[in-house]
Length: 181
Ligand SMILES: [Zn+2]
Image (cartoon, helix red, strand yellow):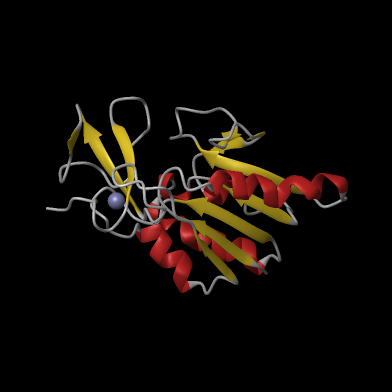
């Protein structure tokens, strides 16, 4: 069935778009649900930066929802899921489930997450690349997420997906302002 990806850096409105996609479904008889990762320690629900909130269940792996009989599922912060979970997305699609996924496409080094690469290889029907306003030059073309500790960018030594527990700060940056090793 249909696969929709909503990708982009921090603060690009991805979660808002995911929530919006599902808003009309509550007026239908379709069985749908929203999910996010247990690694998301910051939020209980899915929360957009303009304070729109949607109820969501925390799961460890997408494997847990493959046999749920859903007509549609939304998955937020996909980069927080195990690398190997793209195969369960493929399975959901085979079952006829519509899958809408949002998340960061690149990590703190500007490299594409493995799970994103594998989702793109599934041939999504729609890929919506969102951009944020650059936290440095204020131009509306931020595509990267820089991770900082004590205001200093970190270039190596972190796991690709970093729990957002307040240890690090995040900035959306454009190609010119993003710093790489
Ligand atoms: Zn910039």
